[in-house]
Length: 275
Image 1: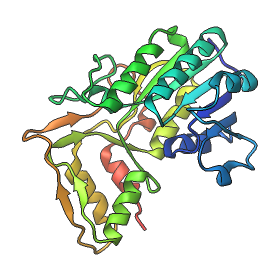
Image 2: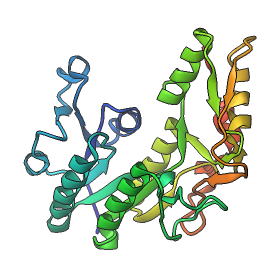
Image 3: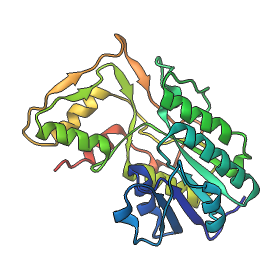
Image 4: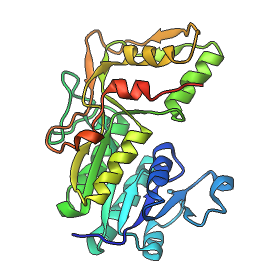
């Protein structure tokens, strides 16, 4: 399925990842995005459309806009997300359209002994992970050329909620939570959006793991980021969910991206300037 003159709709365009994707794509494609709460920020932007997951009909929006590409970065009520995606996938099935779904490493959070790869079976102990699995399974019923599943690990970035919380904790002299036994890979908003841009340009489909190609302990990673803040002595609160190392990492094996789009966790650390 070839998609030319791509019109893109980003669902959840006012969220951290959704908005980063919008900024990456808007100069190259006819890009639209939805917002829910941040009305004052987006009301005058003709490319942003108000959409309330729990109240509005997604099909109405899709029929009016007729996007060739839908990027789903929706957050909110889990039951409403499932219903919205059922309707989105019905639309994708009958139209010349493809869906990119932002999923999560949490689809594997029941497997703690090793990192996970694209074709591994999903299994989750968390409500969030099970939601993502449910939507992934719906996606997998589509023809392969119509769907892309993007599994991301923990996402950082200077304006990310995680980093903002860390800054706030340091300023207020409050503890920053670290998980000493958690082994993970990571990414940031810049890396994820560049990778998605590439996948759209090249009409790629299937399942992709969009994280660093190496692993680190959560505590070591956070400590190194905090060192960039300056001469503070941040208080660390070590949280032990298990006595053994556990993995929450999505590594690429089957669908590897080009070398210039691969990166290490150190690249993510070096990218942070915490003012």
